Amino acid sequence: MARTIRNPKIDSRSARAKLPQRPEPYWTVISEGCALGYRRGSKGGKWIARFRDDMGRQHYEALGAADDARDPDNLTAFSFTQAQSKARDVFTRKAREIAGDFVPTDGPFTVADALTGYLTKYLRRGGKASGRIESAARTYILPALGRLPVAKLTKRRLEDWHHGIANSAARVRTRKGDTPRFRPHAMTPEANRRRGATANRVLTILKAALNDAYHEGRTPINEAWQRVKAFRKVDSARIRYLTDDEARRLVNACPTDFRALVVGGLMTGCRYGELAALVVEAFKVD
Image (cartoon, rainbow, N blue to C red; front, top):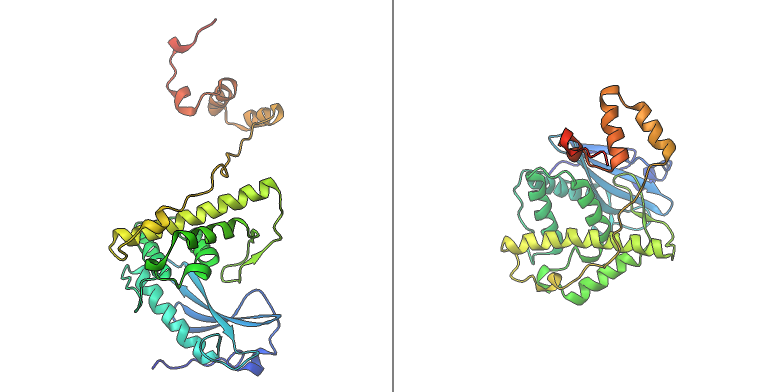
């Protein structure tokens, strides 16, 4: 059994009660690159695991509530020692994920397992949006679907989840590791369109993970999520035109050798490749 690290500031309920509230957790280093954090809130504290990979990037995972207000049961409330044990499990799993050695947990293959396997492959092939995927999974997918066996997913369950995201309030940007917070839902057409677009983006991530699991042979069915359709007409291009004054300021700010190209684009609407390919014969005086 791993040795329990001591920290007099957070290893007891009475010690933690004396700590001031602050956004940054109180950290205890467990081993190199691995730390257990305690964040004290108005309604009690929470434990957080922090893992640093070989590239120096930090990975955070919420572990659960601290035993500030009730006795620890190692299920819904964790003592300092129990939180360390759970954090070590997270560190081991993260290290294996990053090394590409994903092994599903014992028992049924769950949505959480599918997401872990998908993210492992995504990082291995050099994906650049892992933070966005992890954030969407942590906020929208894992709380509602993470523990469900993939084989028991149904079209109705996934549609209810998808519509639930669209009808929920938008998330407020927070620090990594913070508990997600949401702003009041404005019932306007534009707000509804944006929430629908968010729901579609999250659905895309979930489908990608489940399809990857299906192609890897980890689940024998794919019908449930294949029949769930994204919302229509919720993605809109952001159209923006320069005013005359903005166009003049842009031209004046350009280096001399680049200015002619910018003016050509503004006057004709041509793209860069079209302008670069022009020859003298392409100019018609009339």
